[in-house]
Figure 1 (spheres, rainbow, N blue to C red):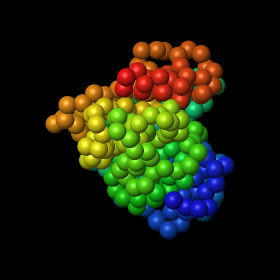
Figure 2: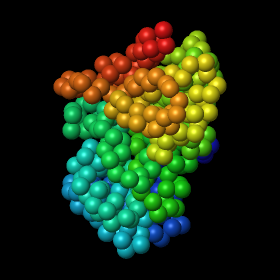
Figure 3: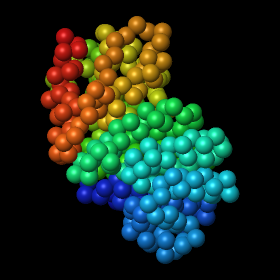
Figure 4: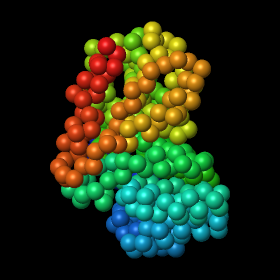
Length: 305
């Protein structure tokens, strides 16, 4: 974490500042954009014009260019809104990065529905689930701007495939303490996993309930060992999984971690059963999907009895 980041600074701004600073020290790093955030990277483009590439609104090409740069020995950082980064060029992610066995840092903004005013085109609750169909990806879902540098800096220095999912939503404070689970609260009646920006709502929803709350900013690889350790400390092996993307995305990872332990699982997240055709606000989408504090509290109480 860095003390220079304030609560007024967005994840997107921290991302751009961190990458720009890293480019000055590491000649491998190259940024590939599709118009989005070009102004944020204007200082980097002025200093390193050959390593900031804006392909225009051609997102499939953007990912393919990233793959080509990786094959040439560079460390590409590929960035735009989530649906244009993951869904539209998914074939290029699968083939030009995964099948070629080269690395890149893909950085999205917009979360599942951060900007509903732009409609369904800018929403991507299924992004992490899509990455789960491809091997070898590390996935980060930070919940606060101050968590971004600790996740991004090692990714820039590495050679692997990393997806960093940024949001305009934020918890009141950073909670991550390393790559695995961070324990925010301890109890005896079950374990609640809060991923990324859901942490504050989970803490409010479980106030006064005798449950352990675990926090994760890194979801792949999944911290199975940390979950097993938490389950050993509770009276009943009940797990409530709260994710800011598609409901049940990490259900397989929970089941694999506890495959030798009989358990119950309640997954909470963006609904798989509802096509939302009203734009509204992000907070209204939370209520609709049961991801506000009231919705989470009701689900947890009903599940635990």
